[in-house]
Image 1 (tube, rainbow, N blue to C red):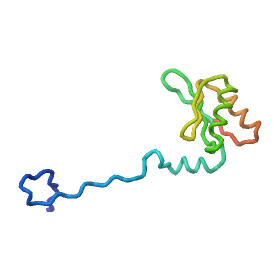
Image 2: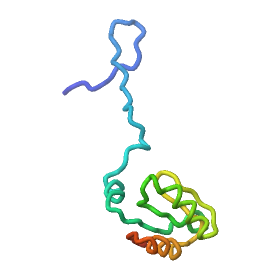
Image 3: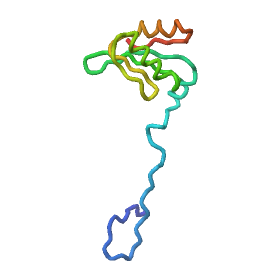
Length: 116
């Protein structure tokens, strides 16, 4: 049977200590799962409702990085509500799925509505 114990601390200095494990240089926030990458490439905008605490939030996925800020600002104005546009997602306070879907359909974009 093989001994798999690892030396943690030694005061006599006769045994060399193992090299510490090196961290990966790529931040976790930049890694994109394959499903999210596939959704971003199919040019379909997905509009969903999420429940946070005791209120609803409208979430819009699938926007290009260049149009994220402009679309977020326009959607907030259209719905008359607050929200944010970050990390490739537009979040609007409240359930505004109908208005958001109509907004993108007027502009000839493909939209999928999700969420209950």
